[in-house]
Length: 240
Ligand SMILES: [Zn+2]
Image (tube, rainbow, N blue to C red; front, side, top):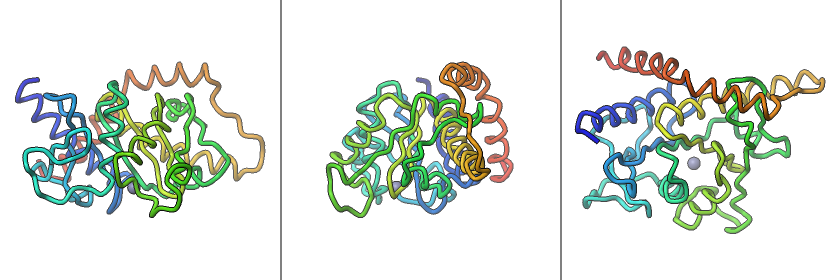
Protein backbone atom coordinates (compact mmCIF):
# COMPACT_ATOMS: atom_id res chain seq x y z
CA UNK A 1 0.00 0.00 0.00
CA UNK A 2 1.32 3.45 -0.85
CA UNK A 3 2.15 6.08 1.74
CA UNK A 4 -0.81 8.17 0.56
CA UNK A 5 -3.20 5.25 0.98
CA UNK A 6 -1.87 4.66 4.49
CA UNK A 7 -2.42 8.33 5.32
CA UNK A 8 -5.98 8.05 4.00
CA UNK A 9 -6.59 4.97 6.12
CA UNK A 10 -5.33 6.72 9.25
CA UNK A 11 -7.63 9.65 8.44
CA UNK A 12 -10.53 7.16 8.11
CA UNK A 13 -9.62 5.60 11.46
CA UNK A 14 -9.47 8.93 13.28
CA UNK A 15 -12.67 10.06 11.52
CA UNK A 16 -14.39 6.79 12.56
CA UNK A 17 -13.69 7.59 16.22
CA UNK A 18 -15.31 11.02 15.88
CA UNK A 19 -18.17 9.82 13.66
CA UNK A 20 -19.20 7.05 16.05
CA UNK A 21 -18.96 9.46 19.00
CA UNK A 22 -21.20 11.89 17.08
CA UNK A 23 -23.74 9.12 16.44
CA UNK A 24 -23.77 8.16 20.12
CA UNK A 25 -22.37 4.68 19.38
CA UNK A 26 -19.25 5.56 21.39
CA UNK A 27 -19.00 7.92 24.37
CA UNK A 28 -16.11 8.15 26.82
CA UNK A 29 -15.62 4.44 26.18
CA UNK A 30 -15.42 2.06 23.25
CA UNK A 31 -12.89 1.94 20.44
CA UNK A 32 -12.27 1.45 16.72
CA UNK A 33 -9.36 -0.30 15.04
CA UNK A 34 -8.15 -1.13 11.54
CA UNK A 35 -5.87 -3.92 10.37
CA UNK A 36 -2.44 -2.54 9.41
CA UNK A 37 -2.48 -2.23 5.60
CA UNK A 38 1.25 -3.00 5.51
CA UNK A 39 1.19 -5.97 7.90
CA UNK A 40 -1.84 -8.28 8.24
CA UNK A 41 -0.49 -9.47 11.61
CA UNK A 42 -0.86 -6.04 13.15
CA UNK A 43 -3.57 -3.49 13.75
CA UNK A 44 -3.84 0.23 14.47
CA UNK A 45 -5.89 1.81 17.27
CA UNK A 46 -5.80 4.86 19.50
CA UNK A 47 -4.09 4.91 22.86
CA UNK A 48 -6.53 4.84 25.81
CA UNK A 49 -8.57 7.95 25.10
CA UNK A 50 -12.22 8.97 24.64
CA UNK A 51 -12.89 8.43 20.91
CA UNK A 52 -14.03 12.01 20.32
CA UNK A 53 -10.60 13.23 21.46
CA UNK A 54 -8.55 10.98 19.16
CA UNK A 55 -5.99 12.66 16.88
CA UNK A 56 -3.68 10.99 14.33
CA UNK A 57 -0.78 11.21 16.80
CA UNK A 58 -2.72 9.04 19.26
CA UNK A 59 -2.73 5.98 16.99
CA UNK A 60 -0.64 3.03 18.20
CA UNK A 61 0.28 -0.22 16.42
CA UNK A 62 -0.36 -3.62 18.04
CA UNK A 63 0.48 -7.20 17.14
CA UNK A 64 -2.32 -9.78 17.11
CA UNK A 65 -1.54 -10.69 20.75
CA UNK A 66 -2.47 -7.02 21.34
CA UNK A 67 0.98 -6.04 22.59
CA UNK A 68 2.07 -2.54 21.56
CA UNK A 69 4.67 -2.53 18.79
CA UNK A 70 7.77 -0.38 18.28
CA UNK A 71 8.37 -0.10 22.05
CA UNK A 72 5.37 2.23 22.40
CA UNK A 73 4.89 2.79 26.14
CA UNK A 74 1.69 4.84 26.00
CA UNK A 75 -1.31 3.43 27.88
CA UNK A 76 -3.43 1.19 25.63
CA UNK A 77 -7.12 0.35 26.01
CA UNK A 78 -7.73 -2.41 28.61
CA UNK A 79 -9.97 -4.22 26.12
CA UNK A 80 -7.58 -4.15 23.14
CA UNK A 81 -7.61 -8.00 23.19
CA UNK A 82 -11.02 -7.86 21.51
CA UNK A 83 -9.39 -6.49 18.38
CA UNK A 84 -6.30 -8.70 18.17
CA UNK A 85 -8.33 -11.87 18.70
CA UNK A 86 -10.89 -10.99 16.04
CA UNK A 87 -8.18 -10.13 13.47
CA UNK A 88 -6.42 -13.41 14.30
CA UNK A 89 -9.55 -15.48 13.78
CA UNK A 90 -11.05 -13.56 10.85
CA UNK A 91 -8.64 -12.80 7.96
CA UNK A 92 -11.58 -11.18 6.13
CA UNK A 93 -12.04 -8.55 8.87
CA UNK A 94 -10.15 -5.28 8.42
CA UNK A 95 -11.95 -3.06 10.94
CA UNK A 96 -13.51 -3.61 14.37
CA UNK A 97 -15.77 -1.39 16.50
CA UNK A 98 -16.40 -2.12 20.19
CA UNK A 99 -19.27 -0.17 21.78
CA UNK A 100 -21.26 0.07 25.01
CA UNK A 101 -24.22 1.79 23.27
CA UNK A 102 -27.08 1.64 25.82
CA UNK A 103 -29.76 1.00 23.18
CA UNK A 104 -28.14 -2.29 22.19
CA UNK A 105 -27.38 -3.62 25.69
CA UNK A 106 -30.97 -4.82 26.43
CA UNK A 107 -30.70 -7.37 23.62
CA UNK A 108 -27.52 -8.74 25.19
CA UNK A 109 -29.38 -9.21 28.49
CA UNK A 110 -32.61 -10.68 27.12
CA UNK A 111 -33.73 -13.89 25.42
CA UNK A 112 -35.21 -11.67 22.67
CA UNK A 113 -32.70 -11.89 19.81
CA UNK A 114 -31.59 -8.81 17.91
CA UNK A 115 -33.02 -9.26 14.41
CA UNK A 116 -33.32 -7.05 11.32
CA UNK A 117 -36.51 -5.03 11.66
CA UNK A 118 -35.73 -2.91 8.57
CA UNK A 119 -33.48 -3.06 5.54
CA UNK A 120 -30.70 -0.99 7.07
CA UNK A 121 -30.22 -3.72 9.68
CA UNK A 122 -30.09 -6.48 7.06
CA UNK A 123 -26.50 -7.45 7.95
CA UNK A 124 -28.00 -8.77 11.23
CA UNK A 125 -29.95 -11.36 9.26
CA UNK A 126 -27.16 -13.92 9.52
CA UNK A 127 -27.87 -14.04 13.27
CA UNK A 128 -26.49 -12.09 16.21
CA UNK A 129 -24.79 -14.29 18.83
CA UNK A 130 -24.49 -13.23 22.47
CA UNK A 131 -21.11 -13.67 24.15
CA UNK A 132 -21.59 -14.92 27.74
CA UNK A 133 -18.29 -14.29 29.51
CA UNK A 134 -19.44 -16.35 32.54
CA UNK A 135 -19.41 -19.56 30.54
CA UNK A 136 -15.64 -19.84 30.56
CA UNK A 137 -14.45 -17.16 32.92
CA UNK A 138 -16.93 -17.16 35.82
CA UNK A 139 -17.32 -13.92 37.72
CA UNK A 140 -15.42 -11.04 36.08
CA UNK A 141 -15.66 -7.25 35.83
CA UNK A 142 -17.26 -7.96 32.40
CA UNK A 143 -14.30 -6.55 30.45
CA UNK A 144 -12.32 -8.51 27.86
CA UNK A 145 -8.95 -8.16 29.54
CA UNK A 146 -6.72 -10.86 28.06
CA UNK A 147 -6.07 -12.98 25.01
CA UNK A 148 -8.12 -15.96 26.20
CA UNK A 149 -11.19 -13.79 26.76
CA UNK A 150 -10.64 -12.10 23.40
CA UNK A 151 -10.42 -15.48 21.69
CA UNK A 152 -13.65 -16.65 23.36
CA UNK A 153 -15.37 -13.50 22.11
CA UNK A 154 -14.00 -14.03 18.59
CA UNK A 155 -15.25 -17.65 18.77
CA UNK A 156 -18.73 -16.37 19.70
CA UNK A 157 -18.65 -13.89 16.80
CA UNK A 158 -17.55 -16.72 14.47
CA UNK A 159 -18.36 -15.68 10.88
CA UNK A 160 -21.03 -13.07 11.78
CA UNK A 161 -20.94 -9.27 11.47
CA UNK A 162 -21.98 -8.44 15.03
CA UNK A 163 -21.66 -10.08 18.44
CA UNK A 164 -23.48 -8.85 21.54
CA UNK A 165 -21.75 -9.05 24.91
CA UNK A 166 -24.03 -9.82 27.86
CA UNK A 167 -23.95 -7.09 30.51
CA UNK A 168 -21.51 -5.05 28.46
CA UNK A 169 -22.08 -4.02 24.82
CA UNK A 170 -21.28 -5.29 21.35
CA UNK A 171 -18.72 -5.53 18.56
CA UNK A 172 -19.27 -4.90 14.86
CA UNK A 173 -16.77 -5.93 12.21
CA UNK A 174 -16.28 -5.28 8.51
CA UNK A 175 -13.84 -5.62 5.65
CA UNK A 176 -13.20 -1.86 5.78
CA UNK A 177 -13.56 1.05 8.20
CA UNK A 178 -16.72 2.38 6.48
CA UNK A 179 -18.40 -1.04 6.63
CA UNK A 180 -17.60 -1.55 10.33
CA UNK A 181 -18.81 1.98 11.15
CA UNK A 182 -21.98 1.44 9.09
CA UNK A 183 -22.72 -1.82 10.93
CA UNK A 184 -22.07 -0.31 14.36
CA UNK A 185 -24.32 2.68 13.58
CA UNK A 186 -27.16 0.58 12.18
CA UNK A 187 -26.90 -2.04 14.93
CA UNK A 188 -27.80 0.80 17.29
CA UNK A 189 -30.56 2.11 14.99
CA UNK A 190 -32.08 -1.36 14.46
CA UNK A 191 -32.05 -2.05 18.21
CA UNK A 192 -34.03 1.16 18.85
CA UNK A 193 -36.58 0.39 16.13
CA UNK A 194 -36.94 -3.23 17.22
CA UNK A 195 -37.69 -2.14 20.78
CA UNK A 196 -40.32 0.27 19.45
CA UNK A 197 -41.87 -2.43 17.27
CA UNK A 198 -42.03 -4.85 20.21
CA UNK A 199 -43.47 -2.12 22.47
CA UNK A 200 -46.40 -1.63 20.09
CA UNK A 201 -47.60 -5.00 21.36
CA UNK A 202 -48.52 -6.73 18.12
CA UNK A 203 -46.67 -9.43 16.23
CA UNK A 204 -43.40 -8.17 14.82
CA UNK A 205 -42.40 -9.23 11.31
CA UNK A 206 -38.67 -9.26 10.73
CA UNK A 207 -36.84 -9.35 7.43
CA UNK A 208 -36.88 -12.82 5.95
CA UNK A 209 -33.41 -14.33 5.38
CA UNK A 210 -33.80 -13.88 1.62
CA UNK A 211 -34.83 -10.24 2.09
CA UNK A 212 -31.91 -9.64 4.45
CA UNK A 213 -29.41 -11.09 1.98
CA UNK A 214 -30.70 -8.95 -0.90
CA UNK A 215 -30.90 -5.79 1.21
CA UNK A 216 -27.39 -6.35 2.57
CA UNK A 217 -25.99 -6.67 -0.95
CA UNK A 218 -27.72 -3.42 -1.94
CA UNK A 219 -26.52 -1.57 1.18
CA UNK A 220 -22.94 -2.72 0.66
CA UNK A 221 -23.00 -1.19 -2.83
CA UNK A 222 -23.95 2.26 -1.49
CA UNK A 223 -21.95 2.49 1.76
CA UNK A 224 -19.77 5.17 0.15
CA UNK A 225 -22.74 7.56 0.36
CA UNK A 226 -23.28 7.69 4.16
CA UNK A 227 -19.51 7.42 4.65
CA UNK A 228 -18.98 10.54 2.50
CA UNK A 229 -21.61 12.38 4.56
CA UNK A 230 -20.15 11.30 7.89
CA UNK A 231 -16.60 12.20 6.84
CA UNK A 232 -17.67 15.58 5.46
CA UNK A 233 -19.37 16.42 8.77
CA UNK A 234 -16.25 15.32 10.64
CA UNK A 235 -13.97 17.48 8.49
CA UNK A 236 -16.34 20.44 8.90
CA UNK A 237 -16.32 20.03 12.67
CA UNK A 238 -12.53 19.86 12.64
CA UNK A 239 -12.34 22.98 10.46
CA UNK A 240 -10.55 21.15 7.66
ZN1 LIG B 1 -16.14 -2.71 26.62
